[in-house]
Length: 599
Image (cartoon, rainbow, N blue to C red; front, side, top):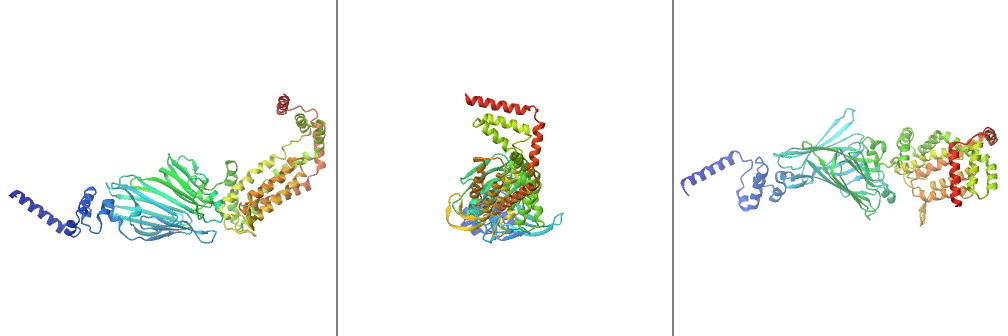
């Protein structure tokens, strides 16, 4: 060794000695460095990759494998897990300080059908994992420990806001997660932000993998599975779902998605982003386990802007008005029926239901009042329908004469009937059209009651729960297409419909099969509705009885002799009346059809 080399070595040692005395942040540990050459190499590499401000090679509390995997984030993987409860008057949300994971959600206003706390998600049924991309590869937030801080405030409306701030940081930067809930809301707001960590985080998005095994919280598992599906809504305003079939379904969405809902019969767990989720993949399946309704899962990317991302969770009931306030299209998690009946539920029944709830707490009484209000509003149509059928009844002798005269010549018979109706001023559809206009209300209820969380666990008379069937008699055997129980409300509905049909047949000219079909339909619906909610059967039963009463009342004020006199007046008035263009075209079409038939 020459003089220059010796001088350089002495100067280098002096620099190291001065640095270790005045600047080093941790004591020297030369034995560890000598005994663990792998650790020295990894720590040095980590320091070179990230920042000299964090001399991890001198921190004896972090093992080499952890530093190799997490780099500058390695110190965040040490700590103790705590569970912090964030709650308002509606929900309790248990959040872990390890990763900021939502471990449990308790809906405080609801119970399972076994009267246990209704945990919409818990650690056993739901796994929600957020991850970030680093220069070392993807890292799950569940590996990091955060420091919690609870605070309370008020919004502009004076409602209390509970906030949980989770912070994890090193000298290189800070990662923060903030959860907040407002009184009266089922929405959990979450924000995620990163301060600094330059060169550590390599992606401008936050990845989420969420799998939820929807637990059975209702008595009727089959009905729950029919009403449980994965829904989503794209940023362009398109609502889609994976259906309610038993087979496994998988879908990848090419456009941004605004929200995703794990929607079961009465409750929804959802995630929402106003800016839209990217790279969304969805799947659902039906397990054999009777304790699980359906398994749903999604993987997606949450875009970050300037190191931060905002999203929301919804954990709550499928109440139409509640969901409508959450975000665009979120109310579609409630099935209001097909487009031609959904307007009845959305704009009439829902508002009527909420209005009556302010004054009555018995839902059987509310159903009766809804029937009375609807029947009163539709009473002009009921009256016109009755008058139309009465006119057909008083001209029955003329129709019978045509049948005897033309016998089996149906075409000629129809032509002469049209002439007779025109001459007497009678329309054969005048009795049917008003009934047709009332059909949307009957069909709307078919969707409203099975999906109405308001009826859940509400009792009336012998029914313990209006949202499911009223098991009046438990059968020791199963009847195909009927079930192993007897629903008394369904039986009452069937009997009332048969009585109504018998009464109605006295007012019409129907004969033969058309007359008997009215007796077949109630029996068919007895099989169909036996396992449907008691509230639906009770509504139809009350509706039949009110309609029966309406017609009996109208009959007291409608005189068939006066109707006959009016028909005779029309007969004289229309004696020389020319055929309308529509009548002429209809008659020509009937003649052409008869000619083709003969050929």
